[in-house]
Length: 475
Image (tube, rainbow, N blue to C red; front, side, top):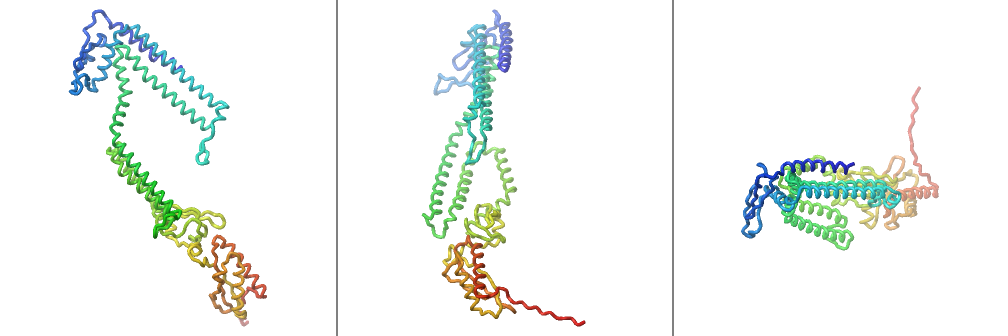
């Protein structure tokens, strides 16, 4: 159906124009007009001559090559088709030209039908069982982006677009060429070819003129990429401990590399900006200002978290894997980036803190003492006893209970502090060292159990005496 429509669109206007041409071709035809280009005079056929088409133009010959005619771009299209019409095509008989045009149309029809047949056959093969078995799902880093059916649908859409594009190209090329066989439509062929090839010519010329700026941009980008690769290499060496810089810690390597990478790319964009096509236009500048304003208004909190993340990075309050306490939440640092910090509690709960909140909060790091100090983290427990029990006995029981606890350091030795002397009891605090920070809840459990067992072996009750005075009111 589409091919038949294509035949009517081409053949019917051609028959009308052929009839019009046969009427205008009389024995006493007027003298043909002349077109002069340089030293050459070309006669146009009589049927093309009319007051509006009487074009005579003389081009100035370049001094470097006198054999080449220079014709203004405005007059090139009408002249070249009048030359074509007055040349080999113009000398052919009307029926012969009509036969060539019909043959060209039939060839285009057959070629388009063949292309559509091949594409339809390919679509049928894709939709068959064999095609569905061969097409695999699309994965991206173990994530299924598209299923097999979705991949087939995408391929079918692409094939359909390619089919329409090839058909359009064939029609665009064939219609003006068919029109060029007849004098009455040769000017329309010029216009159609101009609509098609003038934009392509302008784009090609613009691209050729842009090549020097493109080379500069490529050079700047290549230099930036190799500088970033060098920084990446030194960052990896520092992070692995192979390269040591005084007062520069290994955990600073990765964030410093990212900051320098952003700054280098920003500097590169600022350098190549004047060389971008259309960078000096008002529209380009307006869009740039609009994007900048939207970004600054909508990302104030994000920028604050980003700056806070940089400050926290260079403050070094904790690192990945540390056991910390932030706003009464105790857990292990499992993620730390420029925007947020995530903790995993002992109950496998994940808590996310924006960097702005962390920057304004107190941070307790339980790993600092165990990593940087030989003694380790001090854990403690408190008990109270009445004054009837000698304090030396309480001290011995508490120290032995701490030494019997797993994951507690034998050296330095646990010690006891008396933190309070109440009216009816004294408060004793047992302190012991450990480097297994991840086991702190378990260590406390075992320490409490050993304290209870120790006092039970000595026949002492952990309950402290409390006295209360009760007075009876007189009746």
